[in-house]
Length: 389
Image 1 (spheres, rainbow, N blue to C red):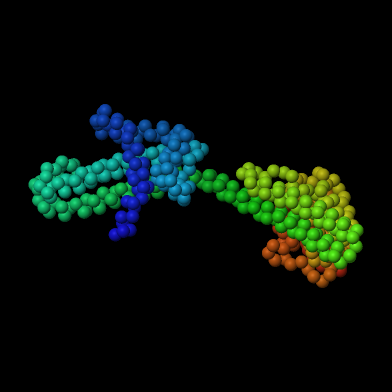
Image 2 (cartoon, rainbow, N blue to C red):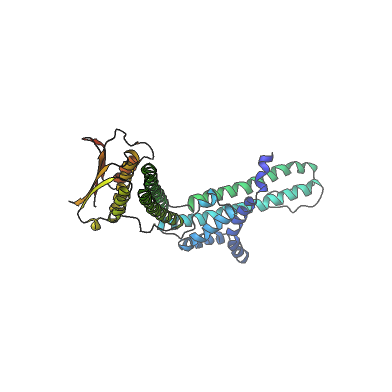
């Protein structure tokens, strides 16, 4: 019983009824001036050109969100679009919506008023009072048994109020909801957001992971060396690497705060010198050979190449320590080649979730390239080929 009465304790039940009554206000005024059956037909015809106006979709959408879903910002309101009509399909659905709202509003108002009058007449007749003799129910006499018809009349009134509200809300989601084109655009936007989050996660992993690795290696080397001059150089390297990591962190956080597309400023292969110097400062003997016009490499390829090189050097410092490293970067024949080799110590980097090798492969795959990692003639070799187009 409590469950059946629950809808009548919610404001949205009555705002939905108000939404239907608003739809018949102007036809009712017209009917008051010109009492003829064709008034409703003319009103339905007038709604056809009105529904073709793009801005009407915004008006109807705002009304539906406010009155059909109340003040709640949940799925009931999110399923109704407030953007103007962008296609003839949107205009056609809006015309159908206006016609359906007018029809349901007429039927609901008729039954609501007549059932309410019938309930009053039944109560009056049971107590021997004069009745208004509504159109829905004609009563003769003043018999006590008329009160037995009062609960069915009230139940029908309640069902009309709740049922019509739910029906118009379902139609609003169907006719005022997003079109297939809008659903596809929303899906693409959501996909772009997820891809951007994945890219930001990689950025943080590569930048912060590299900085922490360099700091750990430098701190351990300085403690083992016991040389004040070496300790000063190690602290300077830690400071520079930490400062670069903080700059990357601030840039990534700036992207997260902005609602628009991410701005530039990410490091590229032309900035690879600081990676090589950072590795050298950590004790690694880096032999670098960079050939070809790096400045002509497209931005996305250059930026991802920088991160791949950063992750490869980080893996060397993390798993092999201060060992000789050979770095080859070449731009030729429409492709970018990166190779990092170091003596294989017998401990291979992990390839599971969150590992550097997995990040290298994912970055290469996103650009249509290939990545090969593993032992090669006594060395650990990372070889990546990225197309420039």
